[in-house]
Length: 247
Image (cartoon, rainbow, N blue to C red):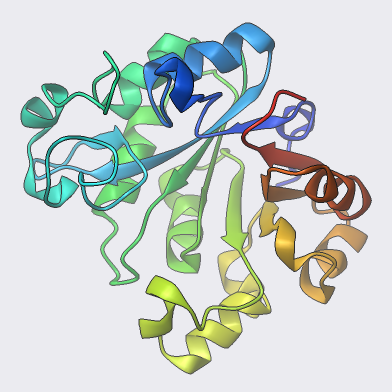
């Protein structure tokens, strides 16, 4: 399906409009409300709890952002609801509560995290949460299998691939070389059939996003943090996912 015009109509606040110095942290209700107040779209991340709920949180573990440690998927949604973010009054919200708070006032782009292990439990739960909502919500993932599954699980929702040029570093290094190549060159497009691409700004320009953009598919670019990044985004993408400044 063609991506809707609202997807690229305004800059997208990466994990909400968060400023740690003001005790507004990423992926929190406070960051969402700050973005809404400025009229920015919101990108957020979701993880799965031990009892099958989708919560808004980027990392697989609690350690970086809270005073607790251990994996998100080892805690129930009730247990997570009692955990505060560092130096913040915010608690970890469910995706449903997060979307209710935003109330369709700005678009939301939900990134579904993946262990690249074929587990679609989180994807199914996200599809259940967004079903029946009239809000402008797009879904995306680094995992082509998730994007492919969303065609059936969340029909009518814009779905996108998050990608970068190289996958030989960090957590990606464990993936087979053939998969790294497929991800970095969008070789899965015939199978995943996304409606948009979210591409790493440091890897622009690049033939893969240039090609899909040539054929009319919008490209978002992440994470724009500097004037140089912003200039690159203006040249090679249709909208930016930004952080650390207010456009």
